[in-house]
Every structure is written in structure tokens, then in C-alpha cells.
Amino acid sequence: MNTSAPSPKEVPRRLRRKEARPAELLEAATRLFVEKGYAATRVEEVAALANVSKGTLFLYYPSKEALLKAVVRENIAGRFAQWQAELQDFPGTTAELVRYAFAVWLEHIANTHAGGICKLMTSECCNFPELAHFYLEEVVHPGNALIRKILERGIARGEFRSIDVDAGIHLITTPMFSYIQWRYSMGVCYPDALGLSAQAYYDIHVDNLLRGLAA
Image (cartoon, rainbow, N blue to C red; front, side, top):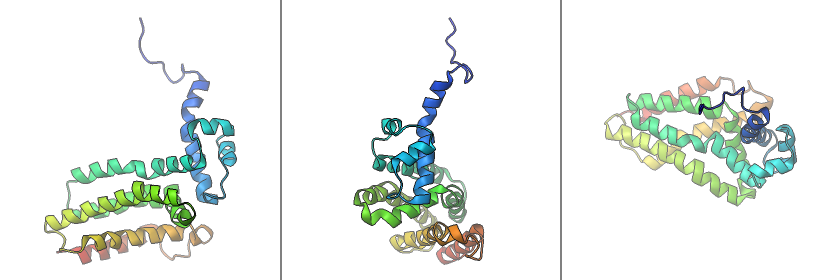
């Protein structure tokens, strides 16, 4: 008896379409939330962009709030486990780890729709306290904890001078979010108005950061 799994061509097209729907809905929701904001986006628009009915959308995500939470987890929160593992196994110096962390942030967050989600949450959180709490618990606190481990690693190894780690966390995160706020506000209409590339922005920031942290 043949028990091998069917090839993609053998799987009915309708079944393949059904399996792809959650990802398609999240992609459509991410695009609309970033372009229009959370409050202004209607679930009917998300469903239409994903080429499904509103009823089908609710089968996967029972509310607009649940949909946004899924978008945050898909684009940002779901990456922390991988980042924690990379930090744990990183073979280089802590200065190299900081540069690597900024490069990953630039590639996977700042220069993608995920950066727009960060800006959206900070812009609309006052009107949606439950979503603000969710974002703190699943993005801000894990992100700060990750940065804390990087700083403590450098201090413990004698590579960084002893500093107030709580303050050091904000020293790192503030320029990251400053760039995101610019890119997804004025930068949407005037992408060259900042006067330098994203890479140049991060390079000079990381250089100054590491000089200040050096033991």
C-alpha cells in the first residue's frame, strides 16, 4: 500500500487554497492596517483584498482585534524565540552581536510592513488600551528583555563598561523607533527627506553606541 504523502500537484486546488487562506488574510490585513490604520480599516476590506467573504475571514479570526493580534504575532512577536536562540549561540564578540542585531532589525522589521505595524501600535494605542497591553506584553517587554541580555553579556565578558542597563535599553531602542516613526509618516510622502539611507542611519548610530559602551 502506498502511504507516501501526495505531491502538491495531487492535492486538490481547493484544499491548497484553504490552507493558504490564513496567510493571505494576514498579508492583506498587514497591508491595510499599515496603509489606513487600525480604526479606519474594515474587515470587509481585508476580506475583499484576500478574495474571500467576510464570513470566511471570521472563521479564522473572530474579530478585527484578533486579526490585528495575529498580524503582530506573524510579523514581530513570533520572531523572538528564534532571536533568543541566535543570541544564546552567537559565537562572536558582543559588539559583533549588536551589529548583527541591528542588521536583523533593519532587514526584518524596519524595512518591512512590520515597521509600519510598530508605528501603528504607538499611534493608536491610546484609543485601544487592550491592544496597547497586548503589544507591551508580546513585543515591547520581550524586545527589552532581549536587549538586556545583550548588554549584560557584554558587561559580564568585560567588553562593555558597567552601565545602568535599564537606561541602556532605551539608548538602543529609541533611535530604532525614531527611524520607524519617520519612515511610516513623513517618509511615506517624502522618502528622501531624511537625507541619508536607512543603512547609513543605523551604521552611524551603532558606531557611536559601541564607542560609548566600550570598556
